[in-house]
Length: 164
Image (cartoon, rainbow, N blue to C red; front, side, top):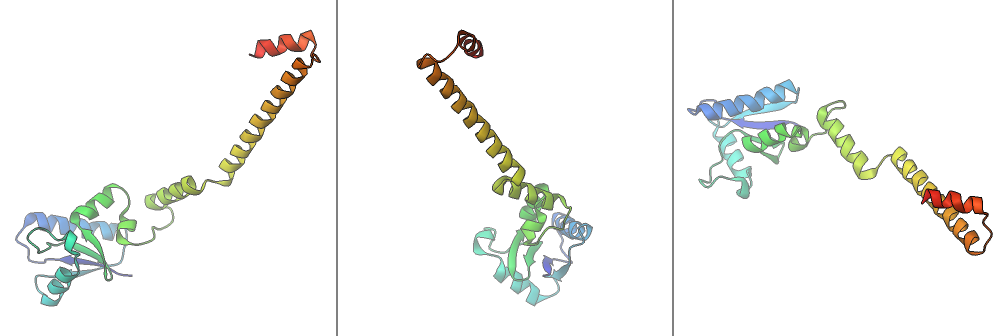
């Protein structure tokens, strides 16, 4: 899978240039394979980008500005959504890629998975806790039954009243 970043090599806007550099620099830092597709010098790239940005993602002018990011044919987003993903440590998810082992995003995904599924240890602790509570309740019920039947010594009654 190749990430496609649609850029304008000869943009007059400093803001657009900075955004493009930010996206490309970040992808390079993460060693993510990507291709830069220039919309300023290649009419086919410009038309493809404009046609494939979803309607709800297009600005009111109707013409999406670079950088626009795709994973092959799948639209990922523009600079603003890329920036949000970067801030949330979810760039791989944003790009539709599996995060590499050991990355912050992979660790976050593991933590979410553990919270969602629970780990064997947590389930075991829950089972032990439930079992202990049930045993204590049974023991208390047994003591109450014995007290009602008059089978409890005075010493046991004093001990039980101290616990309450």
